[in-house]
Image (cartoon, rainbow, N blue to C red; front, side, top):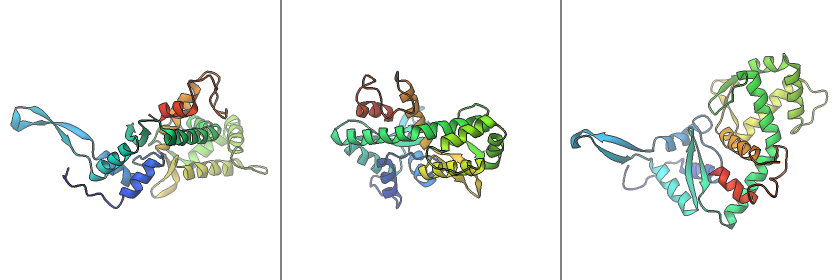
Length: 243
């Protein structure tokens, strides 16, 4: 790594994305992902010093600058299974407000997102959980859902939470669900074919939220907020989730 930091033209987008609480993965934001993924500190064996291990810092200048900025704001860069995001290291008043807002956003989205990905999981993977990087073809998923009365009904009920339909056509309902998830960053189109989609890193953050909520006694994905006697105030519990 150079001693003088020279960030790229993508640096503003990188920090804006991280500070907005969004996920960065190889599929949704490949350029930003490369800036972060290429730069882990690695251990190597120096053959000129009798196999002595030496720590080499190969982080990109963009990552070095972004981590320094995050640290100054009480946050840090985290990575889970190839998905990068920023978490809070300390919970001051500003961070608490931001965490509460994120918690409310996730709770509002939960009934639609959780149920849709469960439907997609059953239609596409036969029950195996979906993860960032998984791909599916619209026509195959559509055929699987249309061939199951149960999945078709679940799809219509689920998407009705975010859109109103008069005499809904199941295929149009599925397209509307995909469009909503594309807009929210949970899916991205596969290059070269807009009928093929890739699960993006945002799902990893949402899955962490879902696991957290379902671990609290008396809280379901449809509740507006955690129970008062759950695991503390919404800010504190969401901070634990995002870390």
